Amino acid sequence: MNQFCVLMTLVFGHVLALSENDFKRHVNHTNSILKQLNGDPITSIITYFMWDSIDIERVTSIFAAPTSVYKDGEINYPDSLVADEEHIRRSMSTYGIQPGDLNINLNQLTLSGMGEDRRNKIKGTVSRLVEEVESDPKTAHFDVRERCRLIALLVNVTQPDIHIFYSRPDEVNGNDDCRLKYKKSDDKNQERVIVYRMWEDDNCYYEVDGQNGKGKKLTQRPIGKGWRKMWDQKCSCSYL
Image (cartoon, rainbow, N blue to C red; front, top):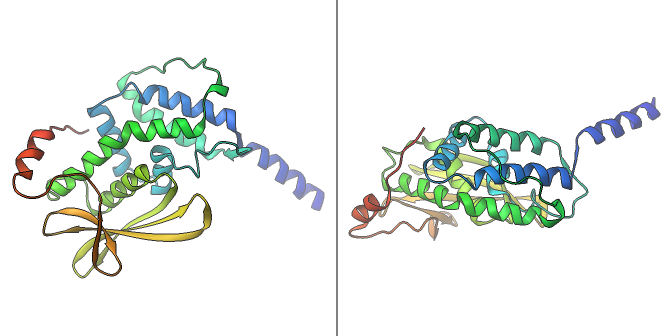
């Protein structure tokens, strides 16, 4: 019986294991399509994943490409990552874009480099979507839960050494805070919490410092007189 259990462990371990080169092949396939998209298609794809029921950990794994997932030198990766790459490719298939050259030597590619390429490709779109929420939350295309997912993605895109696996709205003293939980790549066993809140004085998201202190600003949206006109000139967006 013990031998049978060991054998089944080995069998299932093999089925669920993804080699680094296999993972590279899938990531390169996705990136080759993503790099050909610009503007509204990327906006629509990001919006779709914010509305989708897929959990935030998978979303940050797919788009933010944190180093805990896209790390070079690992022997095997979770086989579930293949399904995630296929999921994002399906969401892009509606635009009829074919992948670029997939015959590239995989030894010339690094997962960390491809992860950085993916973050750089979507960072501007994710940041702009958060800024739209800040500009006018009542007319934004996201509810409170989806805003928190969007914030989680932006934070993880700009901080790839962490991996956000939880995002929930949390009402504190009348404020709709976004509570995020994450693990750092160098210490995957310790959970950490970060909270973001939109301050009413300028309608911008800030990290909550301590109990109620205003910490680091999340986006680059201008504040002060004239910001509304500047924003209206900057943003002309369409959605799904």
